[in-house]
Length: 274
Image 1 (tube, one colour):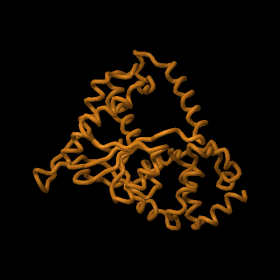
Image 2: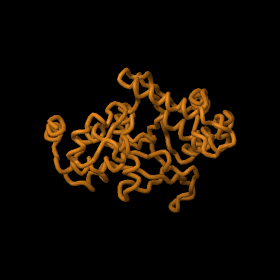
Image 3: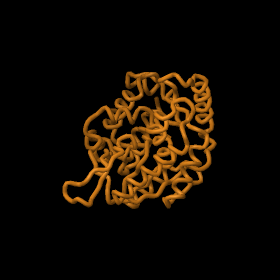
């Protein structure tokens, strides 16, 4: 789903993310995020304009999971299922935006937008099947199921979806994972991949008064795929911000306000009466 501006807010402030050595653990992987991020990391460089070579993309997918295996990281990959009706408007807007971007694609341009090849998902799943990585597909959007599994098994989530910053899970954003294997200084037969991990305690500790029950409201007030920021225009006026305020700064102001309010019922009352 995504919380607008939250990833930038977290990235721009020290103390929210911790250095982490990924090894000897079980992880839940957001398949839809990973398939796209691996293409952005590798495929775009190899063929900017028209989608890259499927063989090369398949090689990079296999290589990534082989690195996880060498670091003794076991995983399950979970995919989104069908589209929810309440998200149709957002999907249509994104599709129209993508069509407009594709019209600008030229082989010679260094600023060509990312265009995912049509068989990207199929190739990704075929590679996982070939190398024996377990996969699961949800009925609808997978975020809640991924978060629930991460909490149940107390293991990291690998994704690139800002929803996981407010889900109470251990979250490793895919762009923070170094695509290299290092040898542990404590044991020559132990390998790891450096990355960064987010823990919800780091956010709550930095903002006394903020508690985990308020975080779903942070998602709504900051804007997401289901809630447009224009719905809260009157509320934003009380915070001296507009619905065109930079998204990451809007997140910061909303967090400050929620920290002062402290309780969900009080926050909901104040929002609903503005």
